Length: 164
Image 1 (cartoon, rainbow, N blue to C red):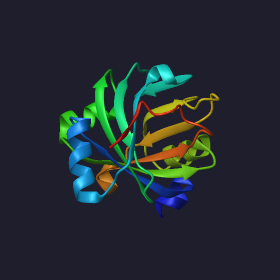
Image 2: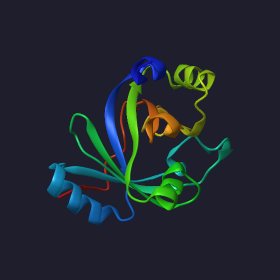
Image 3: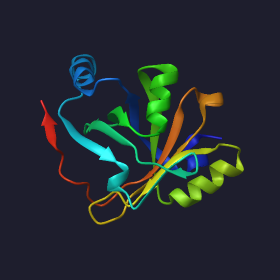
Image 4: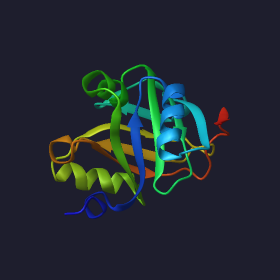
């Protein structure tokens, strides 16, 4: 079954976990022409709910998003338990997940968990208007990376900076 059928959405994002966001911005822009990047400090404090492995988490990460299709995302874990920090510790820098836009993260979680794919991390309420939801699924045994189902928020906060 295709990821789009299983998760219930379409591929929109390729995400990389990196140890240093600024260095990654330089390198990924040079090699993939990814600029401009919108940069944020993304954290559990942005969320109405954030969990990692079924427990609340207080993670903080720096991230950068571009407007490509598919979108590229660079994620530097800063603190707290998260799938990004574990990935960097266990596997180093590289592709972490593919993001799929879905109509319902709840439905995606149900389908994925019924099929044997654990929800590793999830969050909701991270948009300006308290909307937006996501869930990461452990598909490493079959894909070597994670899948993320995303119900995007109507609006994200303004970026802290745009690079370059």
